[in-house]
Length: 309
Ligand SMILES: O=c1[nH]c(=O)c2[nH]c(=O)[nH]c2[nH]1
Image 1 (spheres, rainbow, N blue to C red):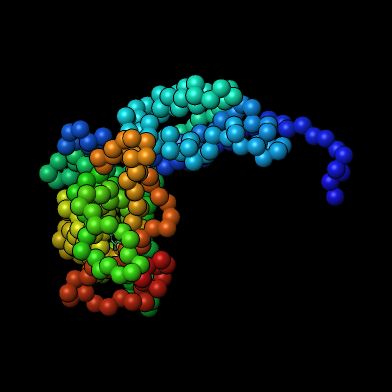
Image 2 (cartoon, rainbow, N blue to C red):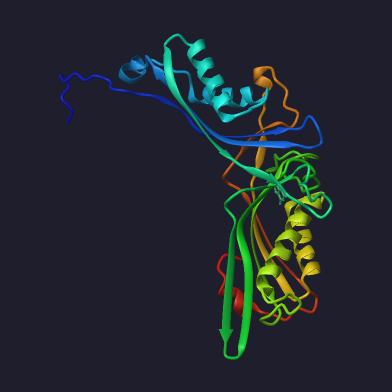
C-alpha cells in the first residue's frame, strides 16, 4: 500500500491527441488534390495541478487539440512541417502556461490513377503508394490444376463522383443521403483462370494478364460514377472479365473506408467537402464474386483462398 506520508514530484509530462486522421481535398478546380495526414499534438508546460490535484484549469482538452487540427485544415494544409508549425504557434501563443510541445505528422502519398481516357492521371481518382501486394495461388487436385491470381491492399480513393442514397430507412437509420462523398477502399481480389494458362498472353503470360487486370480494375474504379461501393465492385469485376477472356471469375473483398465530413460550424467555418475525418473502424465490408455466365463451379478452390465469402 502507498505510504500516505510520502511526497512525490511530477516528472516530465506531455499530453494531447494522437493520430488525428485528416484528409483535406483541395477542390478549387476540377483537378482535385488530396492531402492525407495522421497528426499528433502534445502539449508541454505547467500541468502539475491536473496531475496532483485533478485541477483541469490548465488542461487544453485533447478534444480541443483535435478540433484545432481540423479547423486549421479548412484554410489548407500545405507541407506537413508548415502545418505543425502553425499548431505549435497557436498552442504556445494562446495559452500562457503551454511552453512547448510535440507535433508530429505522417503523410500518406496518393498518386493520380492513369486511365484509358486520362493517361496522365485522373482528376479525382487516386491510388495510395506503397502498400499493394500481388498474390498467387495454385491448387492441384489429381489432374485438375487451378490458378488463382490476385492482389491485396490496393488502396484507392475518389474525391468526388460518388453518392449513396435510396437505402431503406427504419427507426435505426441515421445516415443521411449524400450526393457527393469520398469513396475509398482497399481492394483485395482474386481471379480464377479457366484452365491453367491465359493463352492469349505471351511468355510472361501471368505478368501481362496481371497488368491488364490491374489496369482494368483501376480504370473502372475511376470511371464509374458510384452509386454504392457494391456497384463500383461489380463494374470493376465486369471490366476485368471484359479485358481478359481467360478469367472465369473474380472475387473481391473491399472495406468501405469511410471519410466523414467534419462539422466545422461550431468554429464558425463552413466545410464545402474539403476537410474529412478518415475513420479506420468500424468499416463497411463489401464482398462479391463476378462470374461469367458459363463459368464452371470451382467452389473447392475457393476454400483454399482464405478471406472470401
Ligand atoms: O457504398 C456503400 N454501400 C453500403 O452498403 C453502405 N452502407 C453505408 O452505411 N454506407 C454505404 N456505402
